[in-house]
Image (cartoon, rainbow, N blue to C red; front, top):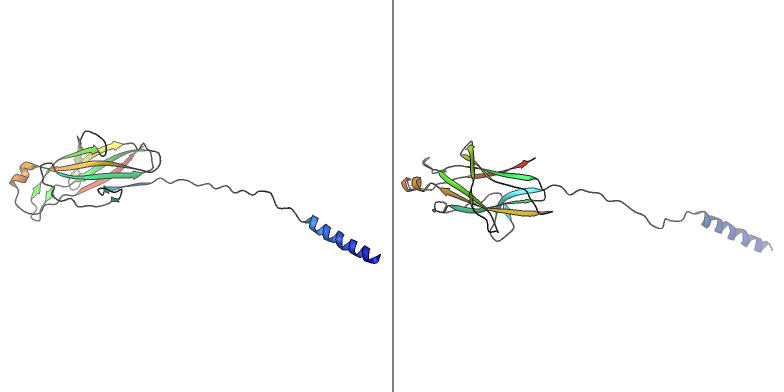
Length: 177
């Protein structure tokens, strides 16, 4: 009988320890919260790709149709943006100058009419232009591309001395709030 009592005491103490342990919850949860940051980059789109470079060289800028290149903005914001440029005259090593006569802009990839950029005044090293204003309309990340054409003054070109001439186009973005 002592054995039965001893076994019963052992069983009761083991059962008491097991029943005293808390049961794990059936389900646990975590809340994850984050934010999609605003992103904006711009530059010159390499032909046939979606690669945007911050600097490119365009040769043969003195054709009567001018130097043509594609400018792009990659962004996920939806605020209105104004794209501006400062364009230096074409200069050679002897400081001979050929003026930029016009800059033309049209949206790439669509049947759009080419329009002249608006001259907004003199800059630190050339004329400043308002190229275009747009509001990104595609939700999420998207690329917006525009074809730009810089045309040299053909009358000044005809009278210019021979040599290599360079003009610089510096493009900036101004958000409109």
